[in-house]
Amino acid sequence: MIDPKLLRTDPDRLRRAQTARGESPELIDQLLEADEDRRAAIAASETLRARQKELGRAVAGATVETRPGLLAEAKSLADQVKEAEAGTGVAEARFAELMALLPNPPYEDVPRGGEDDFTILETQGTPRDFAAEGFTPRDHLELGELLGAIDVERGAKVAGSRFYYLTGVGALLEMALTQYAVSQAVAWGFTPMIVPSLVKPSAMEGTGFLGQAAQDVYYLPADDLYLVGTSEVALAAYHSGEILDGDALPLRYMGYSPCFRREAGSYGKDTRGIFRVHWFDKVEMFVYCRPEDSPAEHRKILGYEKQFITALGIPFQVLDVAAGDLGMSAARKFDCYGWVPSQGKYREITSTSDCTQFQARRLNIRARYADGVGPVATLNGTLCAMTRIIIMILENNQMADGSVVVPEVLRPYLGGRETLVPAGQ
Image (cartoon, rainbow, N blue to C red):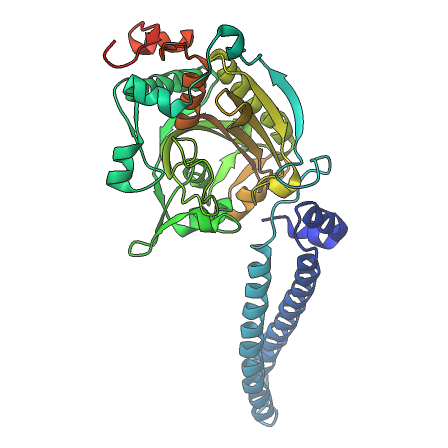
C-alpha cells in the first residue's frame, strides 16, 4: 500500500508509475475520486455527530416548551448519523478496494518496458568452452540420472508433472548447499529462522501475493490457508501489527522453507528436468530497515547474492529488472542469471527486491523513530533456490565422463568429497 498523501500530492508520479508497469493510469483517477468521496463522507459524518453532541447538550438544558422540538430533531439527526456512517463505511471500503489494486510505484530510474527490457549491470565469470575441451555438455537431467541424483520419472508417478526426487548425492548436495548458505547468512548478521509454509490470507495479501500473482498460489479452502511460494511471506508477516524499535533497525532474518508454485501460465516451458517445478526448497534473506536506508540495503543484499554465486564458481549476470516485470510489491528488483551450458544462455537463479514501505503499510509494521512512529521498509533476496543452483553446479562443473567437480566451498559439507561420479563407477 502506498502513502495516501502521495496520491493527493503527486498523482502524476503514480500515473507515470502505472504506465511504466504497463498498467492503466485510470486507476489513479478512480482512486482520487474514491478518496474525495471518502473524505467528503467522513466530513459529513463528523459534522452530523458534532451537531448531535450540541443537540444533546441543548436537550439537557431545554425548557418544557422547547424540549419536544429538540427531541424530535435529535431523533431525526440520529437517523441521519446512522445513514452517514453507513455511507462512510461504503466509501472507505471502495477506497481500500482500489488501493489494494495499486502496485508499488517503481523508482523513476528503473528501466521501462517488460520482461525482455532489463538492463545488464555486470557480467561475472567466463563460461567454459566445452568445444575446446572436446565434448558436448550434458544437461542437468542427464547428469542427474547418471549420478543417481535426480529422479523426475518417479516424481511424476507419485506427485505429477514438475515434481521430482533428489536421491543419493543429489539429496546430499542440497543439504550441503543449505548448510553453506545458512553459515554464510549467519556470518553476514542474519538471524536464521525455520518459518511456516502455510499462512493466513492476511499474510499473503499483505505481502502482495494475492494481486497479480494470485493465480500462481496454492490455496487450501478447507483451512483458509495458503502454501507460500517463498519464505518472504512468513518473514514479512512476522512483525505484522507491531511497532519496532527504530534504534534496533535494520533487522535481518534468514528463512528456510519449502516453496510451492502452481507455475500458472508456464505450460510447455522448461518441462525437462527441475528448472521450473511446483516445489523446491529455498534459503531467503529478509530485512526490515528505515525507509531512507532501503536502497543501500538493497545493494548490500545483492552483494551477498553475488558473493554466494561467485563462491560456487557459477558465471552470472546481474540484471536491473524492467518496471513491467516487477512484482506488485517491488519498487526495484535485481536478478542474477547463471550460465546454463546445455542451453547456451543465462537463466534466473536469484532475485532481490526493494519493497520500500509498501508491504509494511499493508501489514501495519511501524517503528518508533526520534521524530515519531512511521512505517519501516522491507527487502527480500534469494540466497539459494536449491533446484536451480543444483542445475548450475552440475552443468558448469561437469566432466566428459559424466562426473561433476564439487565446488570447493561445499566439500566440507560433503565429507571432503571432491567429485561426484556416475553411479556404478
